[in-house]
Image (cartoon, rainbow, N blue to C red; front, side, top):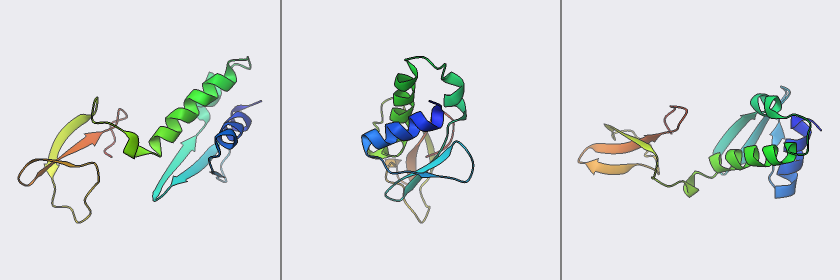
Amino acid sequence: MGARELFEAELARRGVGYSATRWPGRYEIRAGELLVRVSLDNLARQLSGDDQDAERVAWFTDQVLTAVTPDDLAADGLYWLLESNDYPAKAWYRASVAPGWTGCWLTSAGTAR
């Protein structure tokens, strides 16, 4: 089985809904208002056709599902920075550190969340 078949089977096993996009190996998973777009390109390169592929896909799926459930994240290990908090929409993960300032965290990929 390839990356797509294994990923879809793992999502089905976990009861997670998804939609395949018009591009091969691309999926969208929605959790409330959060939409996560997933590419299987890197996963496909890690699969070797052995018995461990299902375990590799399960680990990858864990990472994806963690991304769609950010409420489960903890502040430990996050990189904090200061930024103005005068934005109209306030993020749920902000933490006041001084009047007029909010802590904001970055993911390991360096993108603000």
